[in-house]
Length: 300
Length: 130
Image 1 (spheres, rainbow over the protein chains, first blue to last red):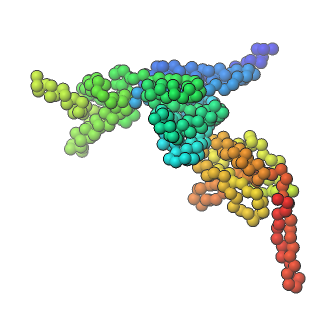
Image 2 (tube, one colour):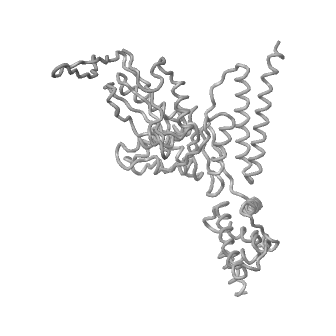
Image 3 (spheres, each protein chain N blue to C red):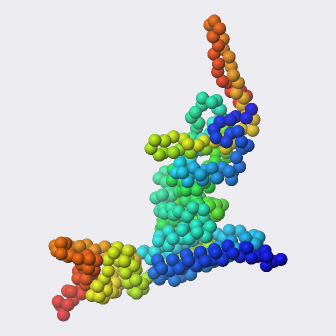
């Protein structure tokens, strides 16, 4: 009797798990590195799939709280993953619409008394059925000013995170140390955020892969000299202050495009497909990052 | 006397799930949903009081339902309706409007007749019992 019962129900369950694995494969192809992040997403996906399968055979469970905190240095992909997360949670059937509303302190906190609550509620209403992404969430809490309106926004957020768990998922993002302090000062938040995901810095190999991926999307490519030059560029840039991982890579590539364009432009009529799509070593080596090296060379 | 104004008013009162489905339909069409209330149900009273702003860039009915719940809590003894405004060029008007809350005792509408000079008679609708 039980086999007759479980057969039709296991069919949609396997279909669902196939969907989940396709989704994870897609994530793997589109995002370089980020192993701990992918592992966590796989765990959440598995949990939701299992929950649905359990619900199908009549086992009741409460919806798991999925509020998350993304911590990591700039350019490690927090916003990108949040955007993907909204899509993933939608496909897993956890949120109804799957859109992402990205906000910062300015969008939540008002300018005068009584302005904050409606503003925060408005944002929450827009995020219903999707994901609310609060970038640099620690700015909400300003202990040095006890009359700061941020506290009011925090209270409303906490209330919504508790009572409307099925309606929206809140993702808080920011630097690791400041988020840690923020959670320490707001125990309400840390107890309601079930998933703390740390985004590691990319290694040089991963950044190289990201660069190739970005170039592929833009329709450019490195030649051999440029590949070697860009590896050297990354090595030097990573040692410098204000290195912002993938964002720095994107900026470097944007500047390389400028140099490439001004190199090709004088002979634009004669330029073939090869010339229009290939970066050579000089496009990279002209960067300011190499300035020290050249002067060093002249001194030597 | 049961007031019949707007869509669905000849049906039994909509449940929250039904309201949710209607609002979702409106949002899918790209209409902006708003909540209004009044204690004056006269048919000529077209402009009810707004409860909050119209909800532009709403994606999900849960937000509207929250607003309806807040309005019911504030004005349990008033009529509350949900409007869906279509801002598409050429329409620019309310496409759907339905009542989501009624007072426990509804007022009565009555036809009043006024005698004029000669055999002239003027008619008016009066609300009674509010």
